[in-house]
Length: 54
Image (cartoon, rainbow, N blue to C red; front, side, top):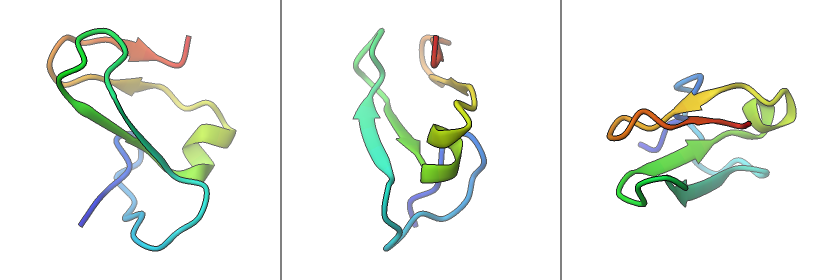
């Protein structure tokens, strides 16, 4: 099951989600649910420690 990197909510079959590679290292997938994107909740890359959104 895919989960939001910030709130750990399952995002299967929900609209408004996004998944992308870490903008810093490009090695790890960052998954964001619609709610965390809307409130601009912080996320961290487990590899390099990059923190976003800036």
